[in-house]
Image (cartoon, rainbow, N blue to C red; front, side):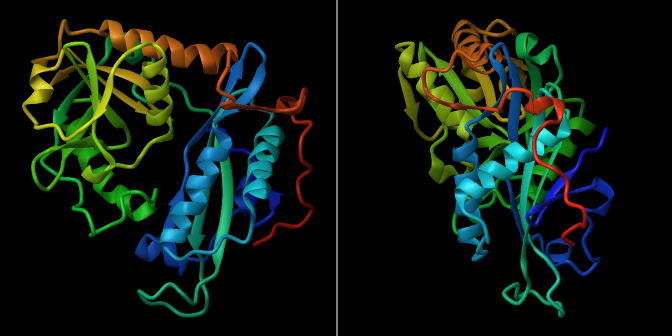
Length: 321
């Protein structure tokens, strides 16, 4: 993977200088929150998708974990734009990270450790493969459940939460599937390892409600808006596992996955075994925004002309480490 300068505690530094001490609290106890954001090369120039919404969720996640970020929303937004501009990339994946550093002593209590902020970018294609957007993916229901409500805060996009996701993903891949779907502790449908889930039955689209231990995705909210604009009824309601096998269509949504159809679950064929009509329409509507820049909702933040060629922020002479 080609590396680029990292925004690190207020300054752009070379990738290999954006380092942390081995006793960083987040390395030992998972005390980090993060975001995944995409910058797209649209017909109108490079643009970041729903930047403010992502960065506000980062702030909200940090608040849940009592981490006070020493930057405002506007400063964080600008830091993302500066980092992308400095990379020279027309399109990229963006990873803002807030974590507890090393404060001189170790222990479960994180309060004595400083809050650090970093933003990195890299090139990343289609998360589940380029053919997945049309052909769909094969998935399994995981043996690992999502964590129960009031055990870990699912509304926070926290590093520690993703140990559960890693178990779900590894199990699926080792069993020959592209992805896994987790159930709640009550056996109801939750979400994928890193994606929200939508189910189509009888022309109605269903998606898991927030109370089922899901991360309330920003792409999920965008897709719900697009579906409603197309006149499709969307219901947030609990779903039993077996409804996955009886669905007319299923699809994942997420910053990495975008809108990816599911063609089978546990070797049960979903619908016709390919992308269904409702999935295709909403996928095309989503891609119309992020690929052409046709954005009536104001979801895109465009980089200044020339910024993607490296004309953005200047790298700091001394790293802030």
